[in-house]
Image 1 (cartoon, helix red, strand yellow):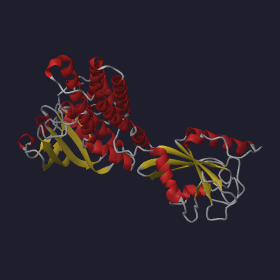
Image 2 (spheres, helix red, strand yellow; image 1 turned 60 degrees about the vertical axis):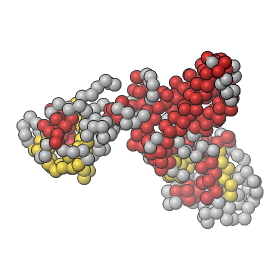
Image 3 (cartoon, helix red, strand yellow; image 1 turned 30 degrees about the vertical axis):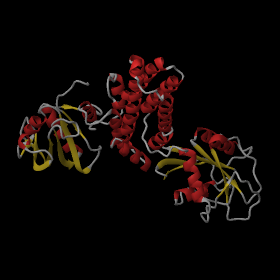
Image 4 (cartoon, one colour; image 1 turned 180 degrees about the horizontal axis):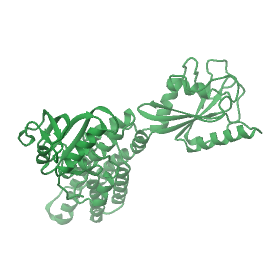
Length: 434
C-alpha cells in the first residue's frame, strides 16, 4: 500500500441525501482520468485552485450524469501532494455513485480507508502526528476534541516534540564529543539538568493523555443516591431543560435514564439511576443493583444526598472517583459536611461550583492543550522510561539510552525508519475519502 501512486477516487461526503456531494480524485494521471469524464474546460489545462462548471459523463457511453463544478489542484499544492481534483455534484446518492463508477471506468480505483491522508504523509504534507489529528478532527464530537485536533493538525504537538528532539540530540552530541575528544577541552556536561527538564516535559505531555482520551470518547457520569435525594432535579439542572421526571414521591425513577450533555467541551452521558436503599421489593432491588453497577463502570459518580432530610447511610461506591453533592441547598439544612458540595437545583446555587468540580475531577491538571492518541502516549511512555534510565547511567553509557529515546520520538512524528505496521495502525480507522 505504501508504494501505490495510481489514481484513486472516493466519495468524500457522508452517506445520505444532501444539497452537495463531493467526489475526490488524486494520483499520477488524475487529471487525465478527470478529462475522460468531464465535458467542459479541459482539466489538464486548468490552473490549480480554480472552479469550472461542466458536466460529468460516463466515459463508456457519453451519458450525462450530472451538472457539476470541478476544482483542480496541482502538485505539490494539494492535500495529498499529488495532482488532484474534486467533483462538486448534487448530493443525491445515485449521482455520487454513478460519478464514482465513471471515474473507475476511466482508469481510477476506489481509495482505501485513509489513503488520501496516507499519501499526504508519504509526500511530506503532514507528519504522522498531524495525520492522526486529521482522524481526530473528523471524529470530534465535542468542542475540546475539536480544539485539540485542530491544534495538533496545525503542528503544536509536532513542534514541541521537535524542540525536545533538538535538545536531546544536542546533549547526545555533547556526550559523544566528551568521550571521543577528551583532550580537546570540551565544556563540562550538565546532563542531569537537561535530562530532568526533558523528563518533566514528557511527563507534562503524558498528563494530557487522560484529557485527550475523554475529549475523544466522552465520559460517563452517574448520579447515585437515596430515593427522593434530588438526582433527577440535578440532572435537569445540569442539562438546562427537563429531561427526567421529577416528583416528591420517593422511587419515581425505577430504572436508569440517560441524557447527553457537554461540559467544558467534553461530551458526557449523564445517567440518572434508581434510588439506592435497602428494600424487599424484588423490582426495586434490581434497580438498586443496576444503579451500583452503573456507578462502578462510570468515569465519575455524583453521590447526591438530601441536606434538608436526615443524613442517609452512604452506599458502596467507588469513592476515589466520586463527588459528594448536598442537594436542596435552598432549604434549611438537617446536617452539614464540608466534604459535600451544596447545590440547589431549584435556585441554581452551587451549580457552577459543581461543574468546575466535575471538570477538575475529569481533567485534573491536564487541561487538554495537546491531543494525544493511544499510540502517541505509548511512545512517550517509552521515551520517559529511557530518560529515567539515562539518569541512572554514567556518561559513557548514557548515550545509548538517549539514542533509544530519540528513535521513539522520531517514530511519534513518523520520521526516520517507521515500521509499516505502525503506519497501517494509524490509518486503519480512517473513513474512505479522507
